[in-house]
Structures are given as structure tokens and as C-alpha cells.
Length: 277
Image (cartoon, rainbow, N blue to C red; front, side, top):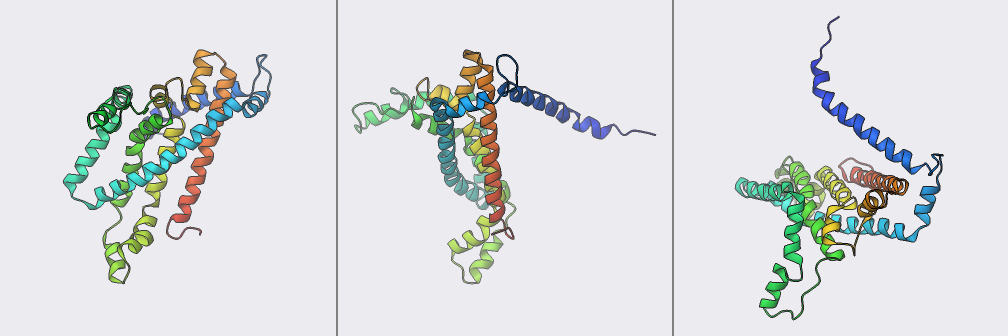
């Protein structure tokens, strides 16, 4: 019997990555349900849920990820729509701009935002030069600075999925709807928007998970004053060596992320043509 090794060679690297991923996930889960003596317990989760300090980190991360994702969706959908309906040259320009921004070294990109948002940054110096402010506006080391950094970082994650779906939605559908008496807005809301639901769902999931689990952006733009759940996990594991609490926070973060992802997918399924309404 002759074995065909080509499929195995193709999926082999992915299988190896999955093995390491599930091994790491199993280790984190094991840490979260064991005490110092190594016995199974749920005390770590009870302690996490009963500690207001930890709940604040979690709820803050959910809140910021939620409204930043919404803002990114409202800003990214028009960009994706223009990319799919505009000229190829314009679409290429936007694609290259977003790709360069997204694939730039993340630390360098965040330091660029620090130079923009700092008290002596480009924005405050420009406003002072125009006489609009006397004292610098605090744009860093607070929630506003973190939200701006997250918005700029995850905008491509919203634009590209929506644009790829809209490119397969023919503009003739809207033309047919308008020829039957629909206004441009009605044609968009009844035809284009439901057909682009897969891209909206994909972009929303990517943007939310990116913002919710962010570590570097709140670390640099929020400093030690404004932190999120990713910073809590890092501090407990790397600084405090409290691996049990870090594992618990990581598992809670994963569960919240999965819950939101399944919720978004459920809503997206209802928006799809022919879905349950």
C-alpha cells in the first residue's frame, strides 16, 4: 500500500502549531484551577470574581474594546465601500496605506503616536501655534490615548474583510433596486449591507479581540496610570510571579472573547439574506 505524503507535508506545519497552541492553553488552564499545593480548586476564579480591582480591569477592557470596535466599524465601512466602488488606483493607494500602517513595527508605530499625542507632541504644539489652547491637552496616559492607539491599529482589520466581501457584491444590485423605485439609501440598507454582513462580522470579531486583549498599546499610551486586562496578566505573571492568578485572568479573558465572538456571529447570521430573523 502506497502512502501519499504530500497532504501530510502540507498540513504538517499547521498541525505542529496547533499542538503547541493547545499544549500552552492546557498549561494555562491547569494553572488556573490549582492552588499552591497543586490541588484542584476553583478558588482562583472565586477570588478573581470577588476582587473589585480585577473586575475593573476586565470591565474596562470590554467597554473600551466595545466602543472602539463600533467606531472602527463606522469609520472603516465607508472606506471599504469606496475602495470596492471607486477607481482601482484609489483602492490600491488605500490598500497600501493601511497595509504599511498595519505591518509597521508595532513598537515604532506606538512611539510615533506618543510623539503625536504627548504634551509637547505635534498636536499640542500645532494647537498652541494657532492660539487655540494655552495649556497642553492631556492626550496620553489616559483612556483617550489608548482608544486612539487601538483605533489606528485595528482599522485595517475592519477595512480589509469588508472590502474583500464588497468586491464580490455587484453594484448592479443597487442599480436594479433604484430602477424599481428604491432610494440610494434604501438600496444600500436592503441590498448591499446585508450582503456585506460576512465582512462586517469578520472585521468586528478581529477588531474586538485585538482591542480586548491589547497589551502594548495601553502599556505605552496608558502608562502605569491606565491599564487593561492584558497588562494585568503580564504584571501578575512576569512581575509578581503569580501564575495562578495570571492563568485565571487569561482563562476569563478567553471565555469573554469566545462569548463575544459567538454573539457577533449569531447576530451576523441573522443579518445574512435568508437567515433567521
